[in-house]
Amino acid sequence: MHPTLHAVKPGSKAGIAKIDPSSTPGFKGDRDQVRDRAEKELADNTAAIAALQERLYAENTRALLVVLQGMDTSGKDGVIRHVFSGVNPQGCHVTSFKKPSENELDQDYLWRIHQQIPPRGEIGVFNRAHYEDVLIVRVHDLVPKGVWSARYAQINEFEHYLAANGVVILKFFLHISKQEQLERLRARLEDPAKNWKFQAGDVRERQFWKDYQAAYEDAITKCSTEWAPWYVIPADRKWYRNWAVSTIVRQTLEMMNPKYPPAPRDLHKVKLV
Amino acid sequence: MHPTLHAVKPGSKAGIAKIDPSSTPGFKGDRDQVRDRAEKELADNTAAIAALQERLYAENTRALLVVLQGMDTSGKDGVIRHVFSGVNPQGCHVTSFKKPSENELDQDYLWRIHQQIPPRGEIGVFNRAHYEDVLIVRVHDLVPKGVWSARYAQINEFEHYLAANGVVILKFFLHISKQEQLERLRARLEDPAKNWKFQAGDVRERQFWKDYQAAYEDAITKCSTEWAPWYVIPADRKWYRNWAVSTIVRQTLEMMNPKYPPAPRDLHKVKLV
Image 1 (cartoon, each protein chain N blue to C red):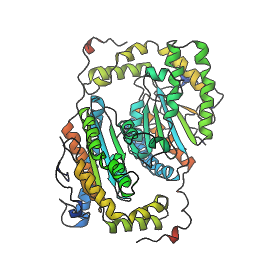
Image 2 (image 1 turned 90 degrees about the vertical axis):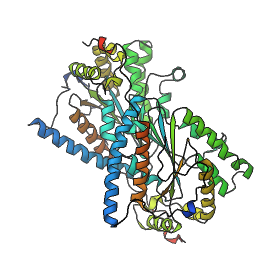
Image 3 (image 1 turned 180 degrees about the horizontal axis):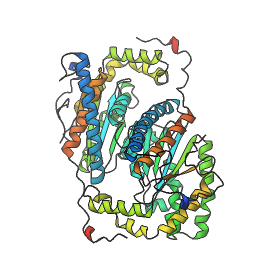
Image 4 (image 1 turned 135 degrees about the vertical axis):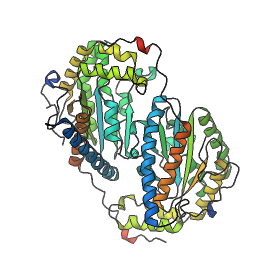
């Protein structure tokens, strides 16, 4: 039911430290040429996703949830712009989960997530998600270890329930190197059109790089399941990152193979005047 | 602050009966040629809207709300697909207001609308909206006349409040002829890929055509304001309808002229390692 490209096999270690963020498997040779090919295939994927999404919407029985996680500057916003612009926004809803509000903190951590699960017929994209509750929360000891360590199983059960109720789930870790992040933060400092994206917090969090990598390794290892697999996407090359995510989304929709619903009975008896 | 093309001047009668739904002002001559030109300009508008939306998102102080109303088959879904596919869905959220649920009916009629007002930095598109509460509600006497007739002023005040709080509002009436609706309903009956869109209710509502036109005339006349104008879009020709809506949306965003926010102070002092 799920594509295998870059998927972490359930029960296996994610092994993100051994995956080269600058690798571009399947794209060898002249850099400009392979990049051109990836961009053409991305455009082709976008058109295919838009057409499949229309059938998903018409079918109205299942939903697709795309979860995007990754370090600051890893390209979550970029993936959304490049892969999902072109999809009819009537059937595609993006939710960015920011620092929880005081009211949200008064609820269980999956409460605000559950509210944003895409309805039947739609694609939902989460820019960060409930995984923050085993990432930043763990790195900064925001709750005791006994609390966050129980969450992996809770998340698996929550996602299992969603999958059993028609929500197909894909989870992407956009994997960048520490050096690549440095260059992207520098661009935000130097390019006036990117200044607004710069947040002092990003520099602070960068100091916890190793802790975050360990937290991602655990979250991906413990929560890549048959019903909701994790994909580790080499993301230093933006063109490869966009190509890989769009290819996996397209393949998933092709496997789902949504169909226009059958015509209502008695349609031929309708009289129009 | 708002474009004038097809706008109903505040205080003037809408006069929709006198507006030809098949007219295509500004596009005279060979039909294929003008249609080609309109489609090229639509693509150009889409690219411009996407670029302006990015600045709107970065600026993060104002929102744009686009309200779409019209008879069944008038093209609300089509406008969304053709005008807003291509816009980054992270900053563009579509809400379809269907028949209210029992819980929604236990609230005042603007309650569910208010919840979906786009946040700062975003474009919100309403596929039907609070105007249903002076349209279908009026045509079918769902509440007493004294109740719905008080709503025009309430709606104007609600929209005035939103405008004063940074929400720029555009309201489009997609104006089709009764004959054109007949042809579009027939296509839904005959084309298997369109069967799913056919609803028996559409045929029933068609019998109330005149009542709906009268209700639209009043709603547009009473609620086209300086702060939230109505636009009457000739919509029998889909290409003209898409061109007109996209042109007005583009012009509005150009008038809003969103800007990247100034760089944070002390940005030059940031040290990256």
